[in-house]
Length: 105
Image (cartoon, helix red, strand yellow):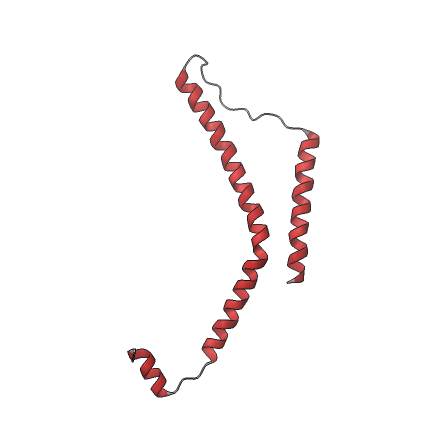
């Protein structure tokens, strides 16, 4: 479990370096297919497609960051569930308890 704590910070450091590197290098605007400029319909389609593309990228990046920060708690809960399942399966019931359990008495 200790290694997972440090892995979280490693992922955060790598993400920070990648963002800093991309800002240092600069970026080129994303080119979309150009429509005829006079029509309102094509303008709306262009704007919506750009917004959709950017929102998909932001959503995916947010999902990755949240997964990194929730991974430790998730692994702890899964471990606790496995332990409880082992404890439950190791319990020995008498024949009377089994009958009562199955018949709901």
